[in-house]
Each structure stands twice: as C-alpha cells, then as structure tokens.
Length: 203
Image 1 (tube, helix red, strand yellow):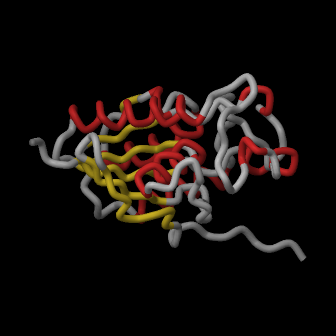
Image 2 (image 1 turned 90 degrees about the vertical axis):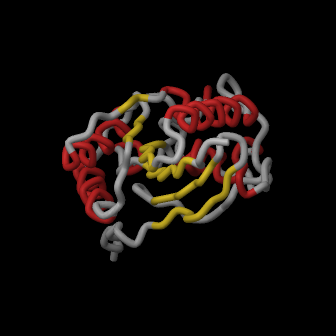
Image 3 (image 1 turned 90 degrees about the horizontal axis):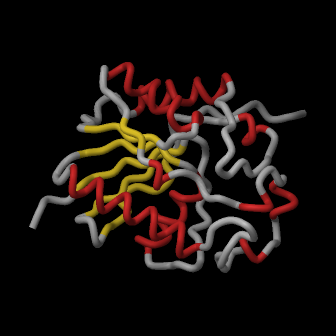
C-alpha cells in the first residue's frame, strides 16, 4: 500500500467578485491588490513547509495565487481542472444576499444548482482529482490552490457530514490540510487563517 499524500488546500486570494459579494462560479474573476497581498502572506506563512508539488485550477484567481508561492520556490505549477470552482449555473453573478436561504446553499446542504452542477458531480470530480494526485505523488506534500465551494464540499465529505456542509468561516487564503491514501482521508487543519490581516472595519 502506498504512503498517504498530504494535501495543503489553500483558497485563492481575494478576487473582484469576492469584494462585490457575488458568486463568480466558473467565470474568471481576477485577484484584487489585497488578494495579491494575501497570496504573499500565505506564501510567507508556509515558507517552512516543504512542498513537492504545487497545483492550481485554470481560473486566474487560483493560478495567480499559486504563482506567487511558486515563484518564491522556483517551482512549476500544475493545472488540475477537476478542482475548479462549482458551476452555479443560472446563479452565476448573483449576490450572496440573493443566494442566502435558497435550498441549493442552505445549512442542510444542496442537491443541484439549476443549470449548473449537482453535489454528486462536484464530489465525484473532486475525489477523482485527489485519487489521481495521490497516485502521482504518494508520500509527498502537495499544495493545492483551489476555491471555497469545492474545498468546503471535500472537507465535509472527509468529515462525514454530507449533504450538510461544514459552516466554519473560510477566509481567502485559508489553509486546510487533508491527509489521504486516495480512498480515505482525514482533515488535520481546517480553514486556518491567522496569517490573513482583516480589512479595516467601516465606521
């Protein structure tokens, strides 16, 4: 049996859609200046962690966050499309307030986004990616710059609570550690964000 792989899942830095409080889903929403600062901060926070590999998704908010870290280490970035953010279908671009209370994103979890993905589809592609990463990198430590929605679903799977979703706060560049043998997994760290400076409060 191969050694387990340690996956450091890091949510991308703040994007323009995050600032606008909108669900960007699969659409590309670039990092803000603060998002790049957050990428620098998480790169510093993780500088003592030796990574064998760095992975991002095709969306620029993920890829650009990964590149900030990769350039410091002079490492390449591998793109894994299966870890891309949730396709929210007809709700792409909707505000958080417009989503709040809908059955697709309630405390009881969701079944499917109209015109988008179902929970089963998201989980299947996410686990497929994790199994492949484990096969390619057994015993290694891998950094994955991913997205809030898909990471929360994977975490909830390994915590054994699906279709409910873990409701812990997940800031941009929050760090989550999952250790997996490709089939089973455990969550060793969940949405840690001590390295992220909070924005000034409005007065």
